[in-house]
Length: 151
Image (cartoon, rainbow, N blue to C red; front, side):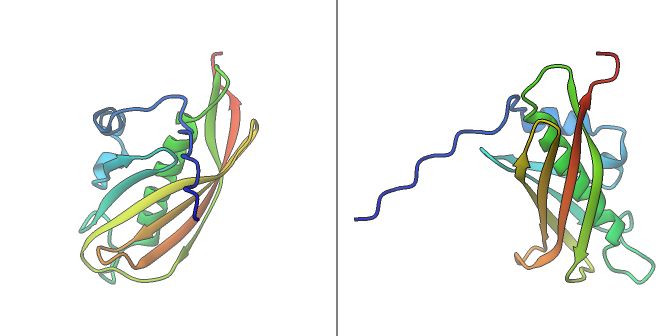
């Protein structure tokens, strides 16, 4: 007999709507490159980004820096949505990205999940895939949890 695994408790201390996520990126790099938020799960965030004139390099393929923008956007937002202490903020400390496959057009989809949610650091893994579900980039983002300026 196979027992069903227990349901995961959501990690979020604040669960925003997709509309609130979109509004938070308005008039920023997030909106400039066309990132669209798609889903907030119990332990993940998902968004997509177009592969177009805003996000390609001169060779006509997705710019690695654009992939990093998508990764850091998802991981940073995720980190700040699951802070356990008031007066804290999550800020990027380190990010790495391995670019696996090139993309010339369409959309790429990023999914961010935490690997570690500590009181002083968080580590997030962000997988970016093409429209066929093939891995384009895998990124790891380390967030420092600091006192919110002005707190």
